[in-house]
Length: 159
Length: 151
Image (cartoon, rainbow over all chains, first blue to last red; front, top):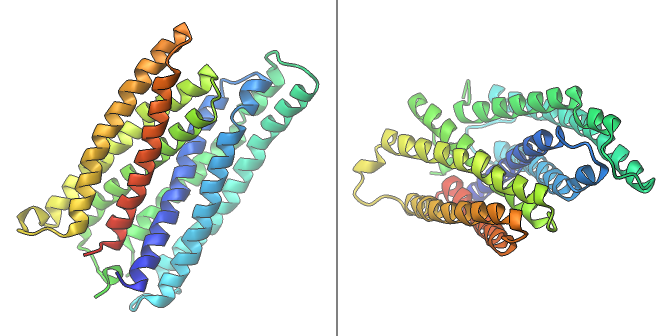
C-alpha cells in the first residue's frame, strides 16, 4: 500500500467514526424523548461522551486527511468543485452539530441540577427540554448534510 | 497506479453508496449497542436500549451493506474473475463471519433482555457486549481493507 492509500484509509476510517457518532446520537435522541427523570437522563452521559469522541475525532480526521489527500494525489486539487463542496458541507455540518449539542445539553444540565437538589421524580420541564424540537431539527439537518457529503464523495461531480 | 486515483463508471456509484451507507449505519449501531451495554451498570432501560439498537439499527445496516456489496461485486464483474483480490476475500470473510457473530449477539442479547424480567440475563448481555466489541474491531479491519485495497 502506498502512502496515499494509507491517507485514504485514515480519511475513510474518520468518515466512519463521524457517521457512527451521528447514528449514536439518533439513538440517544429517540431514547431521551421518553426520559423524564434526572437519573434516566444523566445515565446517558457516558454514551454521549462516546458519541462526542466519535464525532470530533471523525470530523477532525476527515478534514485533515481529506485535504492532505487532495494535495498528495495526482489529478485532484483542493479547489476542485466537488472537494470545495465537501469542505463547505463539512463546515456547515460542524455549525449544525454545535447547535444540536447546545440544544440537548440543556436537558442534561437540568437533570444534573435536579439530582443535586435530591429530586428523583419525573419532571415535566426536564421532559420538555429532552424533547427539544430545535435539537431534533438540527440533528436531522446534520444527517442530511452528512448524506450529501457521502454522495459528493462517491459521485465526485465534475471530477 | 494508486487506487485513490481510480475513476469508477457512474453505474457503480449507487450500489457503492448503498454499501457504504449500510456499513456506516452498521458501525454506528454496533458502537451504540456496545456503549449502552458497557455503561448500563445494570440499568434495565440502558440494557434494552443497547440490545434494541443492535437489532433495529445494526441488523438493517448489515443487510443494506451486504446487498450493496453483492450489487457492486457483480457490477465490477468480480464474480467473473478467477483469482479475486485479497481485499475482496477479506471483506467477504469479515461480512460472513460477522453475520454469524451478529446473529449470536442478537440471540444472546434477546434472551438476556427477556431474562432481565426475572433479574437474570446479565451474563448473556455481557456476551453480547463482548461480541459487539469484536464486531467493531473486525469492521475496523474491513474498512481498512475496503479503502486501502491491499494486495
